Length: 77
Image (cartoon, rainbow, N blue to C red; front, side):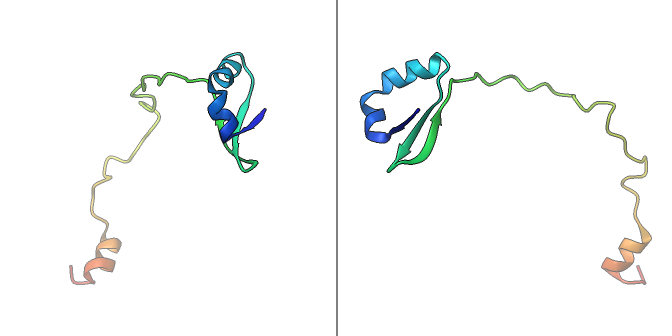
């Protein structure tokens, strides 16, 4: 269902009830769809540590690389 802003203002309670019962409602301005009314979903708590054990890196990750140093500082570094 597509309704214009002026109609949505007048019938907001009815539109909310329709969305609550599963109907899709789109609000348009000058017949151009702008927003969809959707039921609210509470934010879920983020679960930390989902990648634990899945990400691997080299032990020498912080070691200096001679080639990269030469690009930044020249051959004499």
